[in-house]
Structures are given as structure tokens and as C-alpha cells.
Image 1 (spheres, one colour):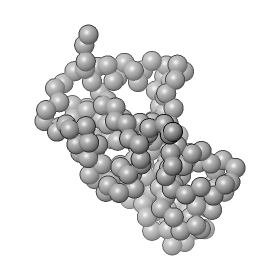
Image 2 (cartoon, helix red, strand yellow):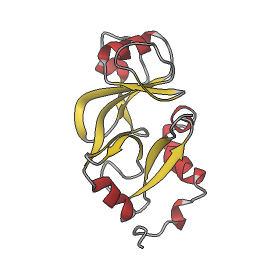
Image 3 (cartoon, one colour):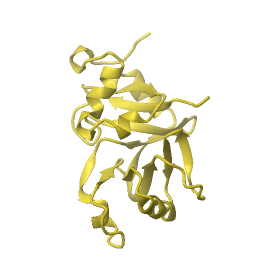
Length: 175
């Protein structure tokens, strides 16, 4: 049995800044805080632009968030059984190891090089979700990443919940 992947989808009312229209793959969420990677923000630079010693990598690098943009993450499909790999689901792994990234590139599989991350202090993400900034979408597969074009991921994530952006009211759930 696998644990579903959690995506944070920016509320249509979250305007301006890096998180408008964002879809974030949540990597950690516990009492100490949370962190995730934006998965729908391609950059203008290609992977080869950023890693000139790896020519032929014409795909874009991705903006993962506003924190530590020098830190790279690699999302990919097929394990290589190397140290530093973390399996998130059957078809999704993540690493911050440059050696694993290079091995993934040489393996010719689908991957995303993501720079930076989004982070929240203890209780911050829960509060932001409570006031309606984020919509939580759980998926059993990473199809949202691998089969949906980047520009359509936000709308598709909402559609998978049966929601259209215009039907979401500002503010969060109040009990």
C-alpha cells in the first residue's frame, strides 16, 4: 500500500507573487513545519544552461520556490538504486544529490530539475489552508506531473476535485 501524494493548489484568490496559480508537491508536513516543490513553474533557462557540463539537456529547469534557489532537487520516475534517492510513490522519486541527478540524466528518463523550495514554519501551512489560501489534492499517482502540461496543472488539479476556479469563494473553512 502506498501513501498518496499531496499537492497544494493555490486558491484562485491567492493573487500576486510566486504562489499565484501554483501547484506544490508537498514533501514534508509535520509539527516542525512543511516543505514542498512548485511543479508548474518552468524557468527560461534549460538544464544545460545551468549545468554546461551536461550538454543536450534542453528541457527547462523549474522554479521550486522562493527558498534557497541554489539548492536543486530532481524529480524522476525510475529508481537507480543509488544513495540519496527518496521514493515518494511507485513512479516518483526525489533527490538533492548532484550525482544522482547526473545519473538520472544519463538514464534518459523523464525528470525535472527544480531549484529552490517552498517552506512553512510550524503551524503556518495549516493556518494558511484554514483561511483558504491552499486547496489540498491527494493523488495515488504522479500523473499530474508526468502527463499534464505545466500550464494546465493548476486547472487540472482543481478539476480532479470537481472544482472550477470560479466556484471557490474567498476565505477558508470556518467551523
